[in-house]
Length: 295
Ligand SMILES: Cc1cc2nc3c(=O)[nH]c(=O)nc-3n(C[C@H](O)[C@H](O)[C@H](O)COP(=O)(O)OP(=O)(O)OC[C@H]3O[C@@H](n4cnc5c(N)ncnc54)[C@H](O)[C@@H]3O)c2cc1C
Image 1 (tube, rainbow, N blue to C red):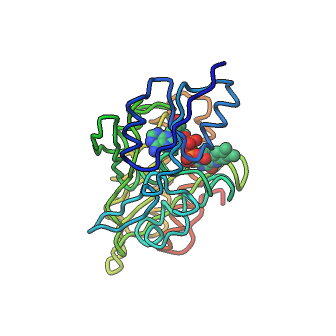
Image 2: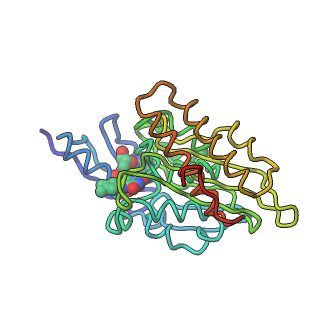
């Protein structure tokens, strides 16, 4: 097997030059937690590896106006504790905290989580709920921005060209009137791949006690994380009490059924959706702890 050529750009100019040399067999290397595992497991090597670890300028979290900007090489360990992320995108901080182990979070990047396009990617589920945009740069030095949903085209598939690198992900920072959380269920409590994940964002009016502008993203059900308009509309303007939690749980099971009709995992995922719906609702802290009928 031929050995991959390794390029180690140390700035965006050098990255652009490196991207000009890519083919469909070339790969970018960020934290390597998905890529190196795949190379070892499937016994393959790219023709060209572009190691991004020297691009320290792509490690940042910034609040610019009302937008939070996160550099593609920011790790989940950094996202988990970053004060801006915790204040303005708590669902992303919580998702980051649930990625793998501490060792994985220390190197796994948000850009790699997107580009790997796993249906189970925790960061992606939170970013879909946040309505994130993805900025890229290509071998011609062109910088473009498109919605995350346009980057993710299927399980393990993106619309990224071989000479295109993610440089940033950005989204509207959540204000203090928003409540948000990320929850997931896997085969064990920690270091586990999601069997179902959910990010929930609501605007909460403390005077009327109602929720609005609801955003729910579901992950690990279907090819990519997605929002379900019918599920979101169900909660619009509802009082933040137990009845709404039951409605939300029913809506989540319906959304799962619409996403994977007839799939063998459907009964499990529908039941998991009920549990996650209550976990998410309770995590918002809007009313007394609600429980499913079986709880
Ligand atoms: C033990 C273990 C546990 C894990 N647990 C979880 C978990 O709980 N939740 C979860 O979501 N993930 C989990 N993962 C998966 C993984 O850690 C994440 O998907 C991680 O975010 C990938 O980022 P990376 O920097 O390691 O990417 P890499 O492995 O370096 O790259 C992944 C892919 O993205 C491409 N890529 C990387 N950066 C860019 C970029 N800037 N622009 C364009 N393409 C790029 C690479 O070419 C490659 O195809 C786990 C992995 C392991 C090994």
